[in-house]
Length: 246
Image 1 (cartoon, rainbow, N blue to C red):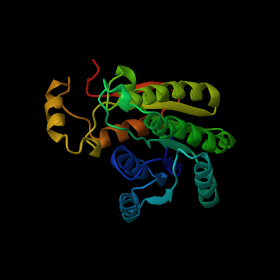
Image 2: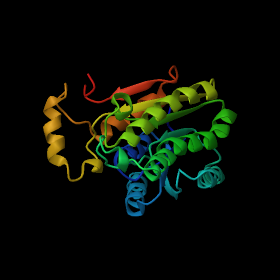
Image 3: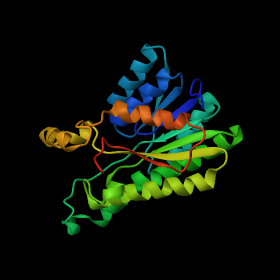
Image 4: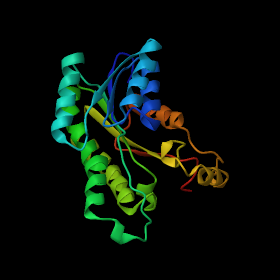
């Protein structure tokens, strides 16, 4: 699929991988809708940079864990641009909880992470699907995590929620075929603000990876765009981790 002149919605698009993906899509000529929940300043800066460089971008606020807000967001995009061609389900949250502290994995934590990381991705996919089906083509990329493959990560509920994202991807690929492709890009360690305060830990990790480097947000963004463009692939879980899980 040629991304030029396509309308792309990127959730959590103001920072990190989401921001890098917005930039990469804009460079390919896509109109970018940058979704955010709280990062107002970051999103405004992201949109301004794209527009100043000759691209097309707008910001739109919605909490993806709330189906009503998602539907309203998609309705506003339709009213503005008449369609939605691409969805990057990037918005995710975590809680840093030691894996062996099971008592800290409270019902509140489980609900919070699942509502955003899993149900939020489903809500967004469901809301945009009618537009893609009408166009007889569309592509969705969900952001997973190697935590969902290894079972370890920032917390047990986070790892399980990302495993659910991988499963959601396969189910949506079946559900939305043949018109809509759905894949999942699975980053390992990425140099984003999630490492804030743990930079030394990140530096120590890099030499132990096969490629001896921590991926950048731009690395992941390039893969996301490549997957959106690839018309002969759906339901795939694609790992980009510098060999971290080998």
